[in-house]
Image: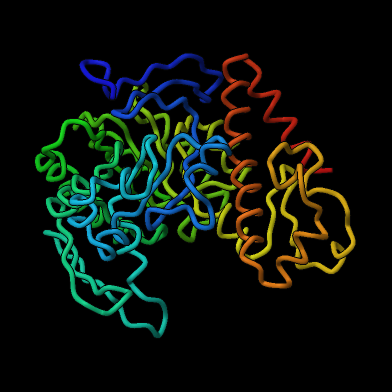
Length: 377
């Protein structure tokens, strides 16, 4: 494990425009940035083993505080050696704060809300059994310290992106909670990141970025995007917000990660990404390609002998045809989810490595242009 003054150091190695390539030091080793983290919500990346993740090129894996708190319980995970030991992953890990999951419990039209927010914290009902629970900043930090990930997040309030008045009050709570999270942290081997909120409103995003910068966190996340706003609004907000954050701290865009999001996020200065998309669409029979998506449920693939992607070197593309993969999907075989998840994560992890290499070579804008040209064909 890294020890001493180098822990949480972020070194920028190259820049091109706002795009950055660097290295962030964690307690379980360095993270080359930009980097993409597969999502293991319940201490598992669905359908894949840790060895398969390593072979696909994963370095950082995300787990979910809300879900692991409810089941099997953070204290149980701690007794069993922490989340790394529990799930058999010895590389760096990140846990979110559960703020977004609590946000999602608000309920839609005609649905009862499962959570109540006040200035001290949030009371919510479990989506599993309806039992009542309470998250405060101090409680969330204690849970994340029990889980033991290398990067942890402050408790924040993720507000509807286009409601200005609500975002004003949510931002006040988010900033107060960030301060309380920092005071509550006891472990020194976990990098606590602040989370910038403010919806799609430039003045609120600027206020949030500047306030959190004064707290001198080891890194900063941008939250509250890809939660209902348009893609154009997301990219505009991201382009405005990222440059406001401290230059020599890593920037993490939470829960956003299609191939095009990676390219455009890197172009706007993002260093860390995560998203459930690659494994979620895999379980629905979709393959991610640089040029778009393939829906393998389509009958036209029934006798297609080609691999998913002729240029891909993953195990799935080296071994199986589109026809076979479609057969597995139609037959509802579990192997379909594994093979498509392997391919989709390989696609994302290869893309992020190529983006990093392009920045280091001073060729990012050329790479970005070629990426979009391929998607237009």
